[in-house]
Image (cartoon, rainbow, N blue to C red):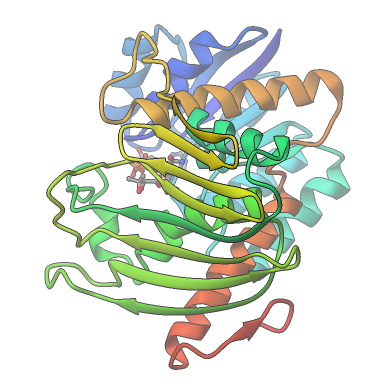
Length: 341
Ligand code: NAD
Ligand code: 89V
């Protein structure tokens, strides 16, 4: 049994805790939050007796295999470095870091300590996205040459995550990071990116719309578009929609988790709806299921001593895309060559 502690008992960490209860071979034995009310509420909800207001005390007092860091980005580096010094494996929420320098320092610290570091980049673990990837890999549409990964909504994300309205960066850093990661997952690493951004909602500080064009090393060109300002006739939050054209056909992941595949043999429509886990709530259930999937993957990797898909090293590439997208948008959508940002 891998023994873990959760640091940060806020809004999203409640999903982590529910998912940990379902992951075989793992148990959260201690909680930490500097906000006493959130700490007590989470401890009571999940029946955890050992609680800490300070992560240094937690690390001194508990014998852990891993920590699950579910705080916001500003505290990731000190907490990751603390855990590395304590030689425990680490899952850290996205966005992993505010800067590539911080991200690289964390990757280096964990490598030097010999511990596993996985970024909780869960969108690629949604079952609908995995189903689409499996069809592409099976050759159902031939060789992909064009793709679109799209997330457009007017859902009020600010109600449960108020920092999204006041941070200096919004949609690319918070949501686009997931959508860019899905594009990497489906089409591979990226050679160039250009981006434009816009703030539509006057009540928030940063951009709530972003459109990005990526040229992948595989030869695929993709469009990654995100919006929290799109008042659509049908709200599909929090679904990521896909369009992929290949040499032999086309794939579409449509609202309501309808995966449509067309090729010379005809058209198939699959229902790739995520299962509704016992603790999940619509419309969040696809994200909640992906939390369970990624946490289970982390424990599988610890048991097999293998590298997680979204290791710290892997996530540097997604973070580079985020940085390059902001750079491009600030520079009149100029094309950024990855590695030169
Ligand atoms: P939140 O503000 O609700 O919770 C963060 C908690 O961490 C707070 O209770 C705070 O007191 C605690 N905290 C901060 N620094 C601490 C420290 N040094 N020691 C102990 N406790 C500390 O934030 P949230 O909305 O739950 O978001 C947390 C992270 O999860 C963010 O990085 C966010 O981007 C990410 N998130 C991810 C997803 C996803 O699908 N992967 C969804 C939502 C949020
Ligand atoms: O995944 C996230 O970080 C969330 C949400 C899906 C709401 O954008 O902020």
